[in-house]
Image 1: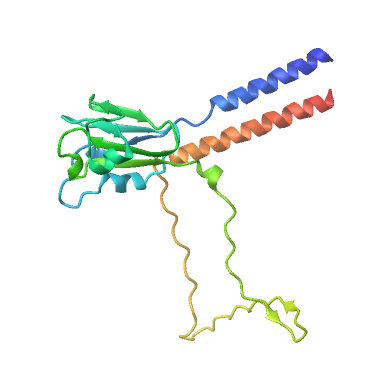
Image 2: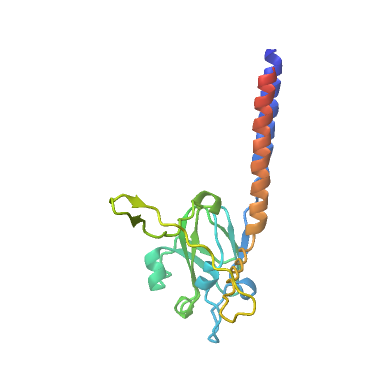
Amino acid sequence: MASLRVAVFAVSCALLAASVSSAPPPAVYKVGDERGWAVPSANGTETYNHWAKRNRFQVGDILNFKYANDSVLLVSHDDYKQCSTETPVSRFTGGDTKFTLDGLGPFYFVSGVPGHCEKGQRMIARVRMPSSLTAGVPAAAPGMPPTVRAGGAPRPAASLPAVPSVAGSGSASTPTPAPSPLPEASGASSRRALSVVSSDVVGLAVVGAVTLFVVV
């Protein structure tokens, strides 16, 4: 009996370990997309901060800087604001830098070449909590105030019935179409799918272990 319980516990632990090992890999973002890490041109090219805001970075994700005859500096907030390159936190000069975002909050990057930061070659990458942890209950829409009867006791206002549209009438209103969903950031869809699979495996492992213990 005891040996069977130990075997069941070992199997459940193995299943849990397998589900953890199947966690989604970090997403890799190529900074600036095809342009890479370079001085923005003067013809309305998207700035690096606009590019960063289009993506949702999470802890463990990787920023891939590709550049030539340039460098990447990780700096403090004050040095970022002043485009100072004298005392960076880290300096990268290899031409193909892969920087791992290892914590929450903003990361400040500037070019190490004199004058490049002032021309727009700098970026703030903000790392946020996973959406599955920050998603809360949506706020309810404000309702109509309750009506008050003669006795002073409030009575909920009755909801108004929908007005049916009349065929052939020019005053009939057409329903407003729902807005199209925004495209997900690169790497987000695959990360969400893998996280769902991992959570399902964990749930099956726990249910199976509990069931076997009850049977034994």
